[in-house]
Image (tube, rainbow, N blue to C red; front, side, top):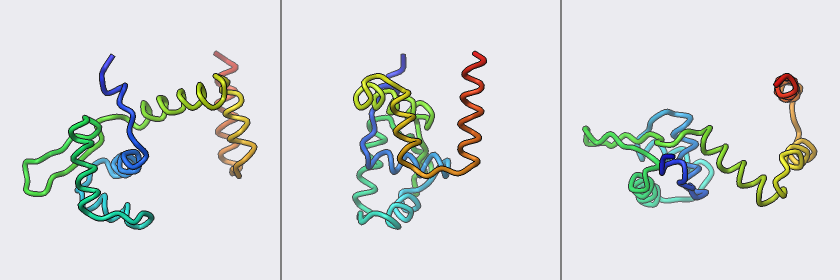
Length: 127
């Protein structure tokens, strides 16, 4: 099992990873510009955090040019799986049903989302 599978990004690191997952790759400046639309953080803070993430192995960086290009080194799916598993265990007593009921009961969802959920349930029943 890879050591990357055990990395647990902090909340701030997850914000950066979400940007990198969406954009595929980005400079510190690009990440900072997106972060600054909803968070009050200085450029040097973003730079330092991304350097730490590089040292931890959460991101990789192409430093062949003067401006470094960063990209995620862990997948969105594995990270989601890891966090959801921990959440089910710690907050919902190991019950995925409780998690789903909480999520569906407390949030507005579109007809399309409900159809997607129904397809997933139908596929799970077939297995």
